[in-house]
Amino acid sequence: AKISDASIYKNLDKKKFEITSIYINKKGAWKIVESPLLAASTLSKGDFFSFLPWSKNASPLTLDADIYFPVLHGPYGEDGTIQGLFEMADVPFVGASVMDSAIGMDKAMTKIILKAKNLPVVKHIILQDQDWVKQKEAILSKIKKQFSIPFFVKPACLGSSVGISKVKEYGETSAALDEAFRYDQKILVEEGIKGQELECSVLGNDSPRASLPGEIIPYREFYDYRDKYIDGKTRFAIPAELTSSQIEE
Image 1 (cartoon, rainbow, N blue to C red):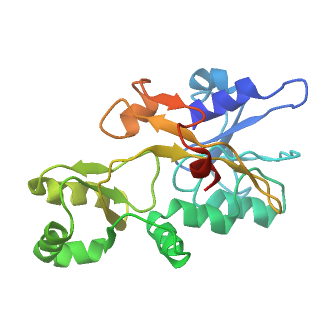
Image 2: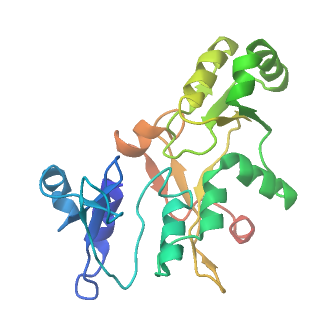
Image 3: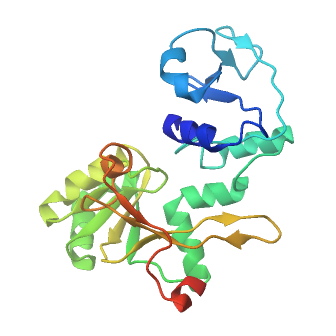
């Protein structure tokens, strides 16, 4: 989130916008940062503020803005939680609604809706942690029967490829499921396919406009956390190498 915040801060026109960055720590306390470019040196200093004015551990904070731009990643930031807070406060914000954010974050629910709209999705199964605890051998047998190598195991409601494993041998399945269940009570097992990884941005509410699709070309086996945030070797093709009919579709 700090990387994304710094990128937005650098690219917004300071002549048009007065920008205030607010960081939220793991305890839920909020802190105003003068510049995200200085966040690393300032987050350890000064007062944090509580969103709840009656908190015993932090000072109340009052701040108003013309529009709020959530740049939080993962749970509480992309899953409809902060969006619900903004909607409840009746303030304008950038991004998807509560429902859209929640559905987009939940990969299992996303697939259910896509299938209901007759859109293609990869072969997959959805597993719950209580079933894994009680029926490990049956689940491992089911996965071996239904999925060829390689396949992916991933938490249903997490981002940044955290907790995702690419299983290349059936003997790795149990460890991959344990890893995914560390982060979520619901996980997916998905068929591995070879294809382009494409992304497309959509802007607008009543009359949405879609950008040209771009292609992510990972340096590693797949677009994992290290590839996204550490190595910096991922390449991007913008626009993606697609035919006109594919772009239109």
